[in-house]
Length: 476
Ligand code: FAD
Image (cartoon, rainbow, N blue to C red; front, side, top):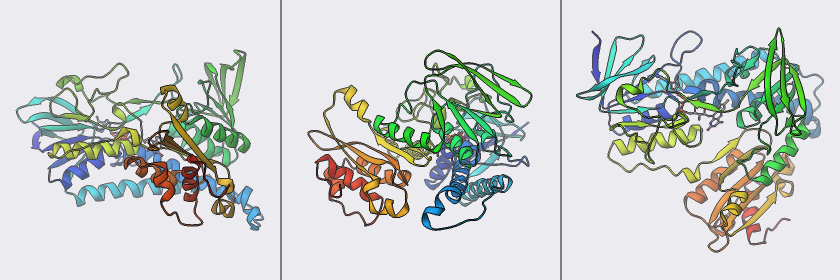
């Protein structure tokens, strides 16, 4: 008979949603258990979920390493730095990435300890409702957890191409794409979204010939069109071959070679031969093994757990956050929901503003935005004014030798309230924080324009774009 342990709240999953929830709930005085099934290569716990193990963190480690390599091979000469020979040691690069991941896993375990969160390693499964709330079994342990409140933060998994399973050797999800042991000569990527662009960029910089096949007719349709056009121009210039509007007919994997059969945008049959194929066509919410039916949990038609605006399911005391529910599949969105739910359970007023969630693509140039795009504003009929400013006219960007791209500010035509800010260029991921803050405080473009920005910084581009809304940019 399993021992039953009572907590105030059990959170299932220790990705950015789950572990952030656990920390905030513990800070608020709740007795918290967190259950996570992720195993490291020795079978031990590896909290942090997709983000830490095979997502945000390892991809950024490889993006930085490969950017250093590209700078050394292509750009250092512009700075007068002569390097006689540069070589890439993929094994060492991957080992460094693994160390970064491990440091993050250990950091989360440390935070659990520090905050007195009880961590269980294993697959969690709803057993039944109980007098105290819900009973949850943890596979591989004889513990039965019981709590009146349960938060599901089970995340997502990569969506496979129909009929083509991931073998992680030739047909790769993000997991295998972050661990290719040697630079492939020819790399195919199906899906030119965020993950495909980031991972395609890593291996292109290291020397692979990368061809990306995208089903949608437009490049990055969720980004502002002007920004997407500029990004496509830069990526094509760098050597990424991006084909839009394709229709994948099939993938033949025979021996070492992979052949992707597809119709191009003119409906002409084509074939792409490659040595490795990354399939990055979206992600599916994880509810398998959870046994949600035991407590009457409802999924929507796409398999996401149904929640209301405050992340509460229709089952009393059961909440769901992060990739397993509607909304953008982003780590910081999961974290925001985590904090809001913890505060709500503790009797405070948790709140997430989905309108000010920033989006970032960590390519070079980086792409980042918050709020609405120009095409969305046009479609909704909202009157707006736009101002933009190129990095090419910014002193810091020139000094860095990184002048591609622009920042664009969109503001309400009557009130001047900022409706969206869009950037493609150096450090766009960092620059967007100012825009998020501005929008969270309902700032006007004039507010941004009147704030002192240090010189010379890239952030002056945002200020100039805000000034340009009124047609009074100074340095152009
Ligand atoms: P997850 O991180 O997926 O964590 C869920 C956890 O729950 C996992 O550890 C899983 O093992 C566990 N679990 C599932 N079921 C059970 C169960 N029954 N019992 C116990 N444990 C269970 N987002 C960004 O914001 N920025 C980025 O730069 C970024 N880069 C990315 C790069 C890549 C290659 C990928 C694939 C994703 C990236 N993302 C990025 C998205 C980000 O990783 C996710 O949005 C984020 O991880 C979602 O957090 P989560 O807590 O909802 O779920």
